[in-house]
Image (cartoon, rainbow, N blue to C red; front, side, top):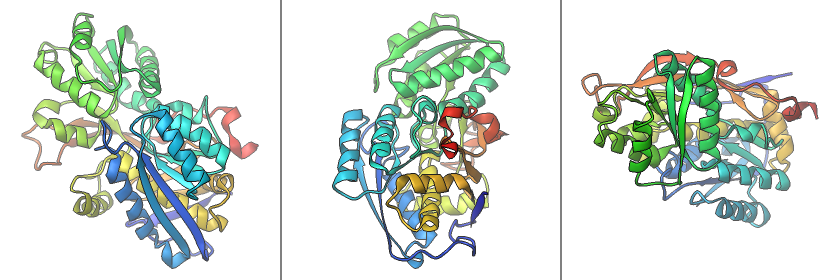
Length: 399
């Protein structure tokens, strides 16, 4: 039976039916990119979001003694793996949060399962986290490449972009994003006319963009993220690619990326996100508090760290301990959550968190009424439509 936990506008209070926990020690590790191309979309902002979650959950009042630590995985699986092992073996960490860069996330997911912790992943996109490499202790909270493809890929193909060329970040996330988007393009009557793998991270996209320009594609799909996407869009503009009529599909793009580019360069881009700071009164209230601390509006990854942490703490309280990661993850799959940032959220048996996704379009400068007033909402996509169906072998509620 599902138990519904509503956090309310400020995501603070649990329902009266939840038993009061006493004296539970919880140690959370925020593991992400703090110095590279993904630092703005995750980085210190994710630590801020996790701290806000602990505060708003009123953890101390509920008998939860929560400590948060953080580290930079530098987008390298070996570094991320070493940190995760040390955290579990020596530092007493119970759960690891965020972990952008899918190659790092997949390595950390394996270690987390081995050490009986919990991974609440907000930053990585690979669908393998809940499919080929599904684990009972992995919760994939915010987005994945299939949801991005369902939103942006379908919208641009149906708008007339039938021929696609992909610039693909050469690691697990980029290949997953290309594969999922290509499938959606073909399902909607389009075709893939070319592809090139781009080293990650990259500064110079000129040779790759010239290949795309000469391919005859209607749409150049950027299967990358963060600073790589920003650099690719800037250089495409410098080469006159968009001015000549080809469209750019930013398959994973964040509000911080749009802000860095400016509305003049980014206007008209379609993108799919799970959260936008200016969607409603609840997102605006929370984002103002985040902005006052961090100095920038939150990305969906940072919002996802907050929402996922709130849900994790609710499950820890319900279990009465953070020591058994499998038990806490299983409890999260029994509960339903509702908050001001993501709305209703249900965690499936494979660890995939189901919630609405949104297709946005970047405003033109004359539409924008402020520095961070950047998106128009085009449509809402239900979680059931956005995310891939669950594989039977990954339904850990039946094992």
